[in-house]
Image 1 (cartoon, rainbow, N blue to C red):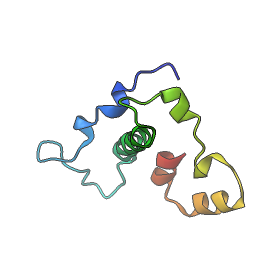
Image 2: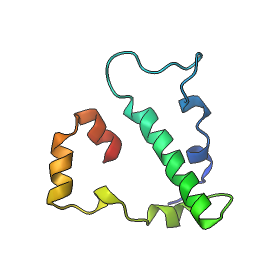
Image 3: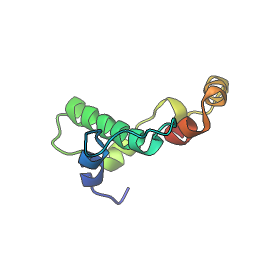
Image 4: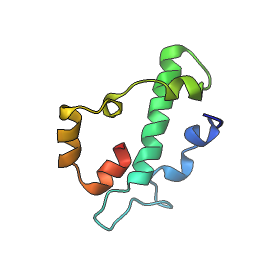
Length: 89
């Protein structure tokens, strides 16, 4: 993967706070959501495997629902808003 885990684990600027409020334009902030999801996936993977930091190559090789194209996945993708598709895919 050629990257360090630090960008995935450093999410302070993605957290909602008074100084960093949520988007207020009625759209999904899929970039912020993706960063937070990546953090949760990495944290869960580290916890499950008893590691201090993730092996990003091993983590990236894990299969997940949207990796396998099939009719069920396609049907779900068609129902999602465009910004949400950018988040998942």
